[in-house]
Length: 287
Figure (cartoon, one colour):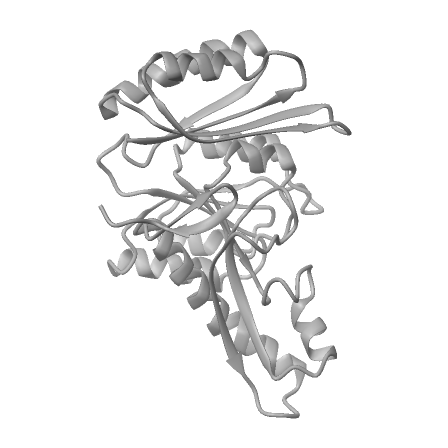
């Protein structure tokens, strides 16, 4: 049974040792281990992917042991496995203004085309609360009057909802690195442009300025770098005739193309066709 352990906290000596010693002492096989020392922030981050020898119920015992180590070492440690519970994966859908990506996910869940459960919707604005209410999904606004999110509340809401995957469905805020590391391999972002050539917040405008006729969207796992290129889950494109106004291009992309791109990317993750290994997306071997 594959288990992912993440640890984040103030940098210090001997932080990884008790975690590694515990899992290896319990008979786990380490598939992947990455550690990062962020000098400027004085932050330690660790990502550990293991083959856990116990039954699913024993993941709770592993989590309890990691909680004790976390308290001793001042680390936020999370233990997660898709196989711990015999349930559909639970999704957190994060939004700002545009409702279309969230609607595509919620409709696909309702119609049985996406084998998942919408556990919670979060927003740094109120714009998509009505979408959540329409599908009877709890909605939490983590933004202030200016739309600035409370990232600590963001993490608490995800933990309270016991989510498996976090979908940034046109959530127009950059997650801080410590949040990215706490949920490493579980945050899926919809970028409204093709990566790597068009990163940033204005990919439609940037592509239009280069006189492109093909536009697109990208779904990728988040790492603590803005729109990094090696974590792409799915990309799709659409082509417009020469002379098409930018407003028409954006309308087509935002209302139709982006939502379907996100849906396909999430489906690939939910159906376990792809995983993130060593910060690269790989095709998962069939069971």
